[in-house]
Length: 403
Image: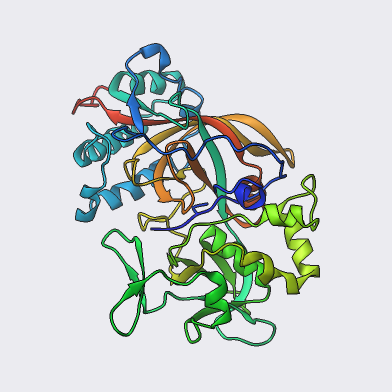
């Protein structure tokens, strides 16, 4: 289970989210975006009134990398283990498989725009997330993969490690963190960040060294990173596990202590502050007890389905209540680069539910993967908007030959 904590909420006073990211902070009353489902309630509700089905036309004009992302979900759904994660009644593993195959066939048909919209509405049932208010309100945030300088050997300025998963960490059958196993076999909660660091519990488990301690923390928050090695090669490190503690934002303390004003709060401001106050990094980051362990990965960063994530085509949700790997439709407002400027614009697009957020909990939360590097980080950092989240499933095993 990959942990993502969105950048925006790293930088906001809001203490809800990741998975697995940043923007200007405002002191506001936190809406109940993380409100859990009621007992017996399900995260998705089937839309029975055709007038409430969204218009997919604009999304049907931009389908870049969508088929590739669908194929990644199909890879996951071929695994026997994928059959057990379908928490919504009426949405089975086979229906998910058939739905992706049918939608992929539609993409191959050549239909676009209004014609593809009509075909989707004809062939697919549409479900909506009940959201945080049973009215479908979902908070969208963003996450990304940072790129840092690093080395697999310490020295020459590389002194701050990311660590591998320790041998004494115990996971459950679904990857949940059970705790730390001691020599007598007893399992207790794994220590929080401060204890791990003070007691040097992970000595000998270093995976890669970075130059900057706050970059280490950013990697913990994002759950993965690209590492530019001394000779120019790029390596990928990804999420392996965490210590089982809940994520806690450090931004409230930074504002309260007068380190950064709420009006100036941003990831860039935090990076600049900690570069000039390196000795304060540990003081603040230890306010967040969650500690993330990493592993070296081949290729691109992967989500909780162990498939590569795709910019704007991968989302992270609470996998205990949403079906994994399925096709979704996003309707919200997102930051986009236009003529060299970042502007907020209405956005609608198809994506796949392929990742998990460590602090992405409940039906009112969704995290969108924005990509790699600084531009993606800026976009992720400016993503904090309400919207609707829909899931699409084939009505029946209809033939698409006529298309």
